[in-house]
Length: 191
Image 1 (cartoon, rainbow, N blue to C red):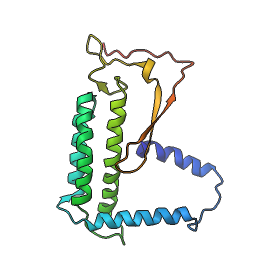
Image 2: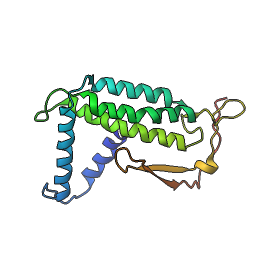
Image 3: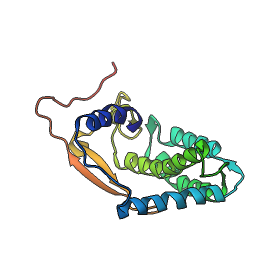
């Protein structure tokens, strides 16, 4: 939700804080700049046969079908088998037009889709780990006798944060328990 939340939260933070001046002389800046240039150069050099939009659509459809509003252990495991293959194909067969010396929206989009490939896998891992129906997402195996969404607050009353460990490496799950003092948890009912 960063596209929606960040503009309202970061702007206020920057406007109300007195921040120390930052220069590009720091070694970490140089490291990240070099990584970004290398990544952009790699994306531009592939010269494959599929557009960024084709990969974006394919990944989006996969997530919609396998990790969408209704998902199951079977569908999530199926998605987790396909995503690494799709990601590998992206890095071997994407075609990004233009160059990195000017504003290049296609290159920007390619960078985002590359990120989405990693994020999609983490989303499916998170959905697979959360064996309950939660919020607007219906876990097929977690339903009441009336086919309503069934929460499992005893085992899943926590916030999940996944730590990225690198491409093709399993992220690490961190859980932060939720404690409710003024609100009583209850089962959602659409009846």
